[in-house]
Length: 279
Image (cartoon, rainbow, N blue to C red; front, side, top):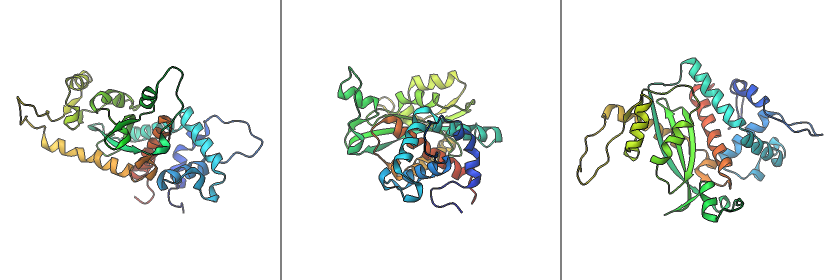
């Protein structure tokens, strides 16, 4: 029986081939198996503990952290998430009727600041590149998501916490790697922009987005209330993802590493929704 945060035999079998294709470095010591490494990363993700606090059963924490960095850099975690989404598409489990975008703001801790600057960049530009921005609560990062009508995460995008949702919609939507598009997109009034409506219309997607209030139209015509009620799906998804304590607060200096943590949480959510042995 798998311990908490660990994958079952069935779940690991779904992604085993993807992990085995990752590049490896030549070492004199025997290589730690992928399942143990992935379980240890999930332990850090769920518990929120520091890498140095990994239980001894997982082996040296440096080995786990190095593999995590390598998988983040070479796109292994991206391929694992994409492979699970494609399996759902092939099985007909993915909802192609309704998709939903939204975002959530995450507080960045002191450890998240101070990433090395590239040559010719100032501190403000470097912070923006690392998806860090100052808002009322201090340094924050905003996580943008798109999910289907069942709450299956489809894409993730990061921006500085002070950024508005609407300019980040196109990058988040285009990050969906599934070769399909929905019939309807349900979003809140933060996405009520002419550019977004035109973008969706060009792809044959019907927007269900309430109009913004203005002085000229204080009470605009509401969106279809029945379909708009589906927005609770992505709100619940965000709640589930933030139960991963390493996700609820940002400790990673590099945006790439934090984005990998978010994608790992999405992988865990897909396993829970569609490949759970206890379901």
